[in-house]
Image 1 (cartoon, one colour):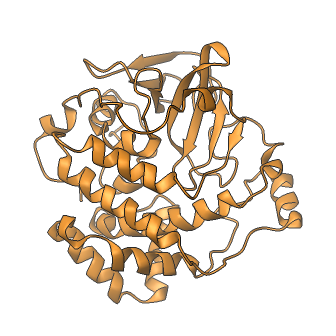
Image 2 (cartoon, helix red, strand yellow):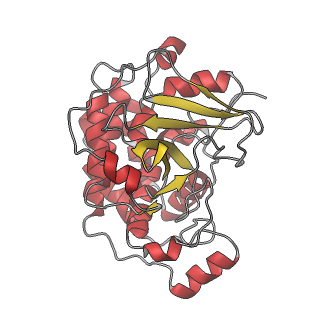
Image 3 (cartoon, rainbow, N blue to C red):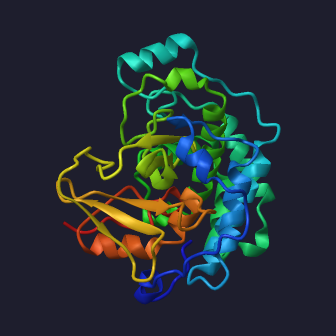
Length: 322
């Protein structure tokens, strides 16, 4: 559902986004807890507002408006969902023993609440912003059997989304985010306190969508990674590869004219991650600003580096050829 266009459309640099809305979050980001669970009252609303602010004049304006509408539908889907279930203390203890996150989708069965969230998103999203491919995907999902939906969810969570089903996977990703974000928000932070610093989410084991560096705390500030699935954030050492943990042969790349964003590239494993700087733009939102900077992904990919794509472009942006 990324709008078609020339290669230059993706590689052009976005303007430094304005910072005229939202609260000042610098102090909270710099001095907050090592692990921060999502706030259900604001996480999707703030993301939607950021996407709407980034869209005007952007090369991917239509796409950003589309995802903003999808995220707003996510917020609406939260209300009155079936109770679902959380892991008990015994399950959390077992997860620790095998060094897995308590909400790891690969070890935790899904309940039907995610399909309820999907149905609500499909029903409530603003149809006017949907391009033809998205409308077709929406209709296909409305007609799909529960077994087909579960199979697509499995493929999405396994990172195995084919290009032909990428449009449907966007809606599935949104529904899974709603349910996993709700579960993460209801966890006891103490259940995650013993987790070692790693590049994957301590709550659900998913990869980060990006990292935010905030001034304060240390001379160079703190970096927090932000989960692509459950919106949990956790502190992570700066200038350390998110993928392999190496602190050797780390380099940075950025688009010309941007000071609020760099790609941290690891020459050891050829992985990279995006780093945003709150001191430069105080209203940054990890997933929204990641989508608004897909040009950097293209350029870094051409240099031979790779990462897990943003969940809303999984199946659309391919890793570079080796």
